[in-house]
Image (cartoon, rainbow, N blue to C red):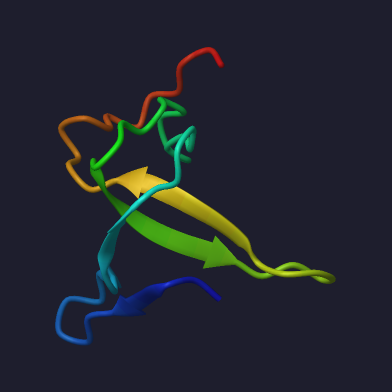
Length: 71
């Protein structure tokens, strides 16, 4: 399960809220380091055992083209 909901009218995935990532976090889409106080979308995925894995993505899609960069 993730922190998203589906808009029933458009069937598009909608994130529930914006937040700020912890220091040193990277965008799960483009792998760039997220700057302090930069708004991000937060999500999580469940695992078979243990707590869910939390991930962050840029809220501004202009900053996150979806292309991965070398880590």
